[in-house]
Image (cartoon, rainbow, N blue to C red):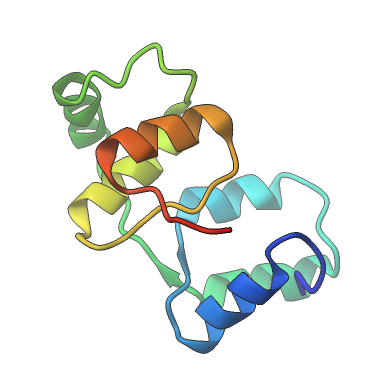
Length: 113
């Protein structure tokens, strides 16, 4: 699974080193789409370490405290940010422009080539 693509080697290294985690909302979003080998892919994703789900009250607090409104990101992105902020050392690996800018400003964007 995920044997193709721009970041194949990097993802492989993260998996090998047990450094790759995900978020339940990301898996749910992926499940909404078309996946190769759907059941196998979802089962694999379910085996990854998952970040905790931050309750909506705390997510809304973070939105206000960090001025994260009108940044071009949505609720799933904000949940990811909140989860990373509650788990020191966790970073978001994204190629999404608006999410990248916000995570960079918060110091939680992973650096990759």
